[in-house]
Image (tube, rainbow, N blue to C red; front, side, top):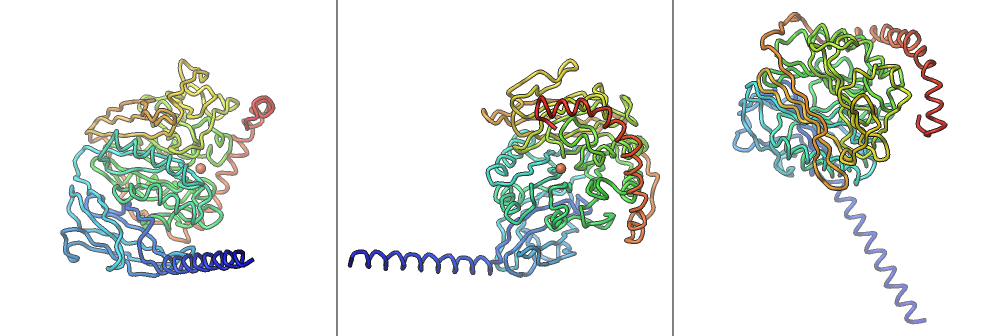
Length: 488
Ligand SMILES: [Fe+2]
């Protein structure tokens, strides 16, 4: 009995000590001003500045230190510190830097700092390169780490990209926990490159939309910032426009107008667009009108403005179209690239879609990253299989003057090998694009509100007159797929 009492007291002491330790640790964590979730984004002139966003558990000052530079050697603007979902979000923008220079920096409150990170400003020459990924869309640390491994593989193929684009769906449910997992997996990488983030529908839509609170972006021309951000920027001889396809289910007329004006306001030789939802795809979501509407409303703008490539995500497979102009094959048209998922959630082909919303002859390359299915396109068929295609997907893009190379790789799940699964080159003449818009391209709140009615009507008209009749034609094959293959 004595021994039992001693054991009981000992157990109680251990429990109390453990509780106190947890309480002290929690209190310490809650009072911490140590930066986390740090990212560097394009913001304004890529040759002279960047945007920075990070979090702290406790309210703290918002400061940056750039190694070797006095504080008055550059300009810091738009500094904010706002409470967001239990933590404090910090943002600031740095401008006035020197082009073509690699900087070391750290952020913090002036006493507690992040680890040092790096970024390199654009040197303005005609060599531009980037890594593109999409749809990590993870819900646990292991799957975020797999996505980060895919990006790490990207850096072995292209060690010094101008930026990394991420075509959206960073997380699955956009919770504090998931963004912390994202930070744990990607944080060390994120300090050392410039990200071009694209808003995805899984980044908090319909709950609390996190996207604009995770990245310090230039929102000056964004038609709204509630569901995502549209913005644009230049690197070297290339212009990049980033769309928000959460805007009125996919895109508002206000954002379409912004895109057209934006693409007409540049004479850069290359024009590339990033967005999330997938207009050309054979994946799970390629049967719904929101994404397919982009097939209706974007091609005329791409044709008019001479856009070379559109990268997007949403359906977790890789598909590259032949060049298209207004949904017709045209060697001088726009190439559409469904980026594949860098993560572990991968979609098989929905065969019932074939020939309904996209002609199969549009497909130049198709790679399914999932086991147990025909997973690559050859000789007009998708029933070929290759185990080498099962893994996380990324693209590298390298522009050298009038030449552009797009190469797609998969980091094999089992072997860790990095397999090249697609490669295509583009050539063009320099100096063909002219500036034809020089006005103000901002959208007032009133103009955006007024655009909502025509936006909904445009989508509804497309859904009723084009999408629905085709859906009914597809329905027998879709039902067969549900019954025979259990695939919807
Ligand atoms: Fe998505």
